[in-house]
Length: 431
Ligand code: CTP
Image 1 (tube, rainbow, N blue to C red):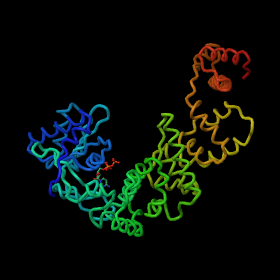
Image 2 (image 1 turned 90 degrees about the horizontal axis):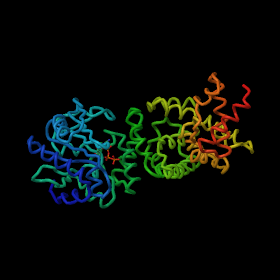
Image 3 (image 1 turned 180 degrees about the horizontal axis):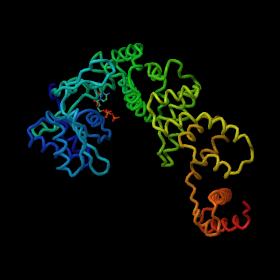
Image 4 (image 1 turned 45 degrees about the horizontal axis):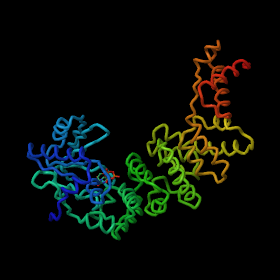
């Protein structure tokens, strides 16, 4: 633990003022309370890489819960505490969060279980972490403010672009670290160290993924496949045994790889439209499970503890692909027919379909819908229809559907003209 460098200037230069002043406030509080205070983990890694990261993970030598409460008071935020682990989260404006933990020593009674926790020191706290690049700390106590603490040569590994674990049981203790290794490898274009790689491979051979819960697997899966161009992860994903969580039948073939590659581009396109409400990871999961039957997908959805929406998507997307391939065969469909066909279909399924179909025509109509018509604004509402004396719900819906069809087919986007359509539709309406 030789202190080699001080990062105070780096902190000051790289952080926005409001973030830097949070660190100063925490530092003052540590003096008041007479405790040791550090910032640790991904924040330190990204500061050294000069990448933005404002996830503040603080650890104090005693009673993180009380420290969190006092910090929330000073910063004018809310606080949530977690008695069992003696931790707190301070929640500030603009979605800013500060995690506060108490230095701890963790050990695992059974592989894959959650760790048991006792009080510890900084060395122990860092030693229990995943990789050397994530196991550095910066001291925030006044006299040592900015001192880098790097027991495991994390800084050197960052420079050499290598992912390394701290000890040989790391993946046995926590198999989700295999997914994390792939995430950092892919994100930073790092290599995995030789020893670390063979530890990963032997963990994979032990079928380590059979033992972890769906919740923990899902959390890391989501983060892994939220990385850009995640299709490039798939080979490693299979190589290091991560697929085994889904059973022993599934493998990554050319077909899946091609779909996943298309998903990369579809997601890039979709984000350029500033529509980013899709769950990326779900598209890659759909690709991975493209050859599996509905009941297999049901089992997997349950094992992953997917929420209702994601679960339904996973169960229904193949049926949609089948129906759409029949629907789109018909040559002269109007725009409005596509509109009604796509309406209500989850965005992840639509995006997946663009990645799935080879036929340009099949893809184009979906992307047109997403880009132009998905949020089509109809100014005419049920109330307007009722004014004409029509009361029955089903008829109101039929009339509105006809109005929206015409508005879409003839590109009518003004309120005035849409009302004219309504007039016309109603005068010729026969239920
Ligand atoms: N950590 C760990 N083992 C895990 C999960 C987390 O050792 N299975 C430690 C690492 O030190 C990590 C820190 O907890 O840096 C915070 O975890 P998390 O927020 O998940 O990761 P980050 O490294 O901050 O990654 P990201 O930048 O994607 O948030």
